[in-house]
Image 1 (cartoon, rainbow, N blue to C red):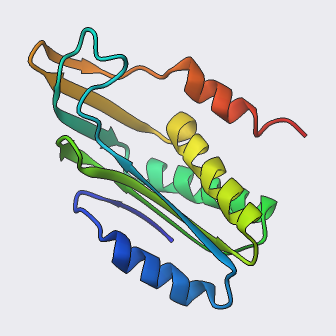
Image 2 (tube, rainbow, N blue to C red; image 1 turned 60 degrees about the horizontal axis):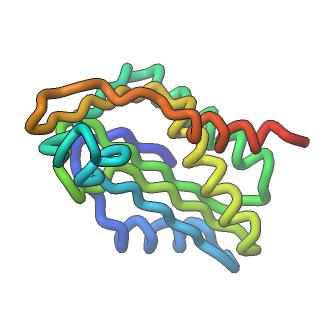
Length: 154
């Protein structure tokens, strides 16, 4: 199940829903991404006042469904949940939720990390941060690419 939304989400409600959908799961892994107060090393940008996330409706949902499908093909998952927020967010706001359920913990952990790595590198979201020094678009990082590359290995 995938959602792209402006509204916040309840981690407790989402956990309960995936637990119901997963049935006899032995493991449920959740990851929640938050807006950081300081982006990068913090030496130049200062405190983040807001983070605005933009996307292309239709294209973004298709990409997220493709990422979810890849994970479901690679691991024996009983249920998945992806929520990605868009719009203007502030420090400590929830941005993203990835939840996976499987009979065994290994598949749940790896698939959640796989989905998150693909979201960071492949999903068409654009982030613009605003600080006391002005606003700027956040560029992709080499570490995000490296995280994605490890899933390409046989």
